[in-house]
Length: 436
Image (cartoon, rainbow, N blue to C red; front, side, top):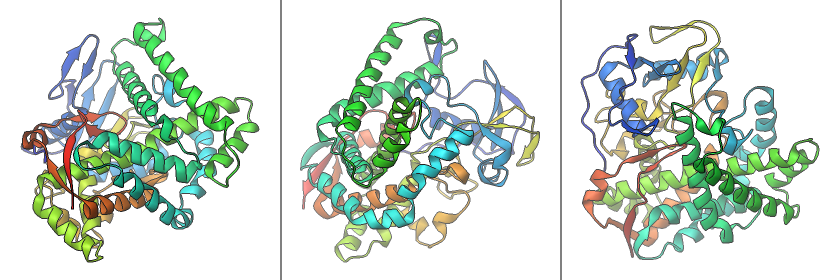
């Protein structure tokens, strides 16, 4: 388990702070940080709403449940999604995590029925069977659990939502997704976006990777036969659009990346936490062996509190002047809700860095306003219900089949965050799986 010393808390601050994030390392013309922990420490030191002066604009970082609920739900109409264009659009195009306005609303309405509770209830058995099959393939010994979890979630998502088998493409998709996501984050964080005006070597690599990714998606579309899945709906909608082929690529890529990363990242963090907490693992196994899933849900909820896959919501720009948690926000200023920082806010959670699944023993604990692992408001994660089905089935199969142990306990103490699209371990972790 990763623990961090908490700085003394302070009242919300409106003082402008120049960019000086803990752990920042300058690399060329951009800044590489453990962004999740950096923002958390800024809020711990300077207040739950902190005004930060960036090179190109001023924004507010927040770990306040009141502020985050206000921006994402209470007054969401006053805050437009503002930051995920530019470099991000070069990979995700007009996929759901990028688009906004009428285009986003139309696309969301097209896809929502396939992820709703009714559809998920019908697919629950298939989803569970698919991911359990993939978990059984993890095998015993020293296992790269990140690679194994990525495969399990990718195959299951594509099989049950798109009705396609992507097993032969998994290795290429993992490589291309990782390269693409990190390329756009690196470009977005640059003080000067050279790729906007010049074809740099980085841009050449990115365009080559993207062309390979497009080729895989195009082949899936070309070889697809109607099967009643969401893939049919997307393909039919694309046929009626002048730019349908690109629109379809954008949504397939977005769905495959976002759809599998949320599950894979949470599953890996959960395995690492259980490897470091043998008593919790034993209690979970005892419940599963006796047909009681209550502690299973508690473990998953606590894992998502400590390591929310949606660790930070993209910035929201105020359309009109407003006030959040007592802090005035001018029209045009941006607020960045950090879910990771809120989930580890000492005012909101006792022992915020400790892995304590029992804190979710009460049925309403996961509904508290300071707990938002899938975001909130109109743009709450569309795949929330599917993710929970996959996670429960995967962890249940893992614990029933294997004992999980760390290869090196120091790894669990020293692992860092790769805080990009989702929150993943900095390096792909290996754990020891022993067949029961």
